Amino acid sequence: MRAQYEMCMGKHPFTAQNEGALIRKILKGVYEPPSGFSKPLLDVVADFLTFDQRKRPTTAALLKRYDVIAKARALGISLAPPTDQETRDLPVYDLPAQRSPPTAQAQPAGA
Image 1: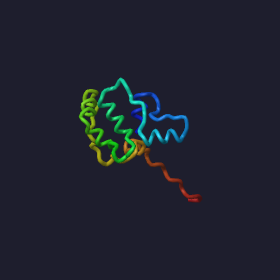
Image 2: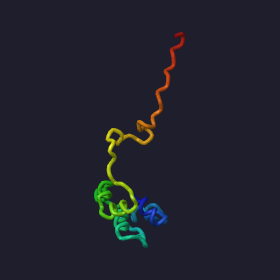
Image 3: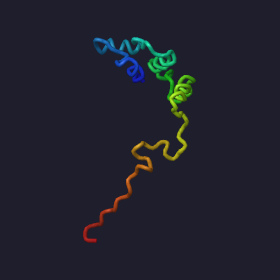
Image 4: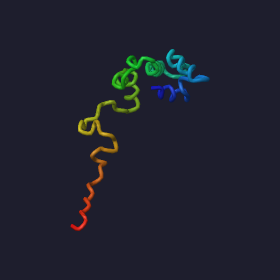
């Protein structure tokens, strides 16, 4: 989940001269902390960069954070789950409203 860091800083969280040094930095969690952002955003970025993936927040946990809910409300963004449970797990390109109409099946030769 380094994307949040990259969006804030405009660069990768972990950089080094060689692969071994890069691996050490990742394992130690050494990165330049973002600056100029709110404390809640910095907390989210730090949580996502936690080495132990079991300790990283899930999307559900992130969406339950007070600061995320408050910001979504301020921006007019609904965090409510979709109401159409039938299409909830379908990829966007496979939603019923976007399906192509059935094509005519080819007739066997000599029919």
